[in-house]
Length: 226
Image (cartoon, rainbow, N blue to C red; front, side, top):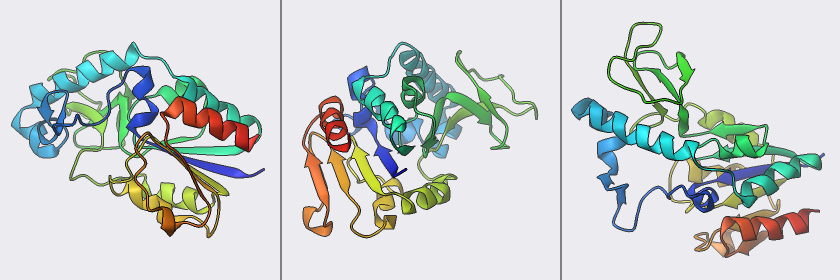
């Protein structure tokens, strides 16, 4: 069974009503990203950070997987599919995909500020005073700017095994996730799906680009793969 590795970014979930990472003005839901997605922002204003993620979590709970998520999940009938996502939502899981790595963390989980192993499922508001089993404050289970990406090595090993690489809804500008394309085997098929694809076409021998939103591009991809 051939192995498909799928790299997904914010454009994968945009049709589910989840906004992409930053607006054109560089702000994230009206905030400078460093205020709400960095250790410095956390220590400067914990209440602001907690409220920001509480609102994002509430938004996520009201969202549903879109056709692109469903199409990717259905590929498991004929392929071994591994998803490596920059997204912190759980829409891949809810669509039925079974092998997903969240490089940047998960919005519906929280963890101890002092022990990254103490992780909890969390669908309610998170407030100051909510503690982990070690007695420490809980924080969003999100990889913030300036923090290590703990699942990167695992993602690299998975990418090395790909027979087909699919990239959906990502600018390929956010590192280290964007570096994963450098670990694929030579000359394997690459499919890039994004309304504004940003990839050097002359750098890859077997590249197909769909300049489409995720649902349309993935539908085209599925027809080829079947």
